[in-house]
Image (cartoon, rainbow, N blue to C red; front, top):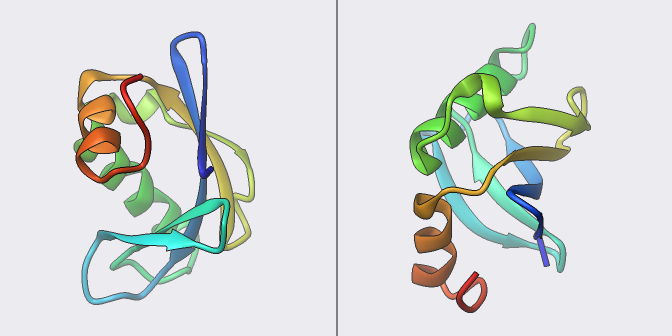
Length: 100
């Protein structure tokens, strides 16, 4: 599974694809990551900034609440953020799990 929940935070394993045509969730990558396409190129942290902005908007959290646990310089990233109702709805709507 590409996410795990501990107390009130979720950890996401993300396969980032920079320089894409749009920011979007693009399905499961392998068995344990979610692929996210990012418009920004992987230059000087631009893709990471765009990824944080996209996740903050998608899950209704502050950008400052999104933390890179590992992989800031890699295409596979581990990111932690607070669990929100928007995240729970997204998981259920997309069939990534049962009720959280």
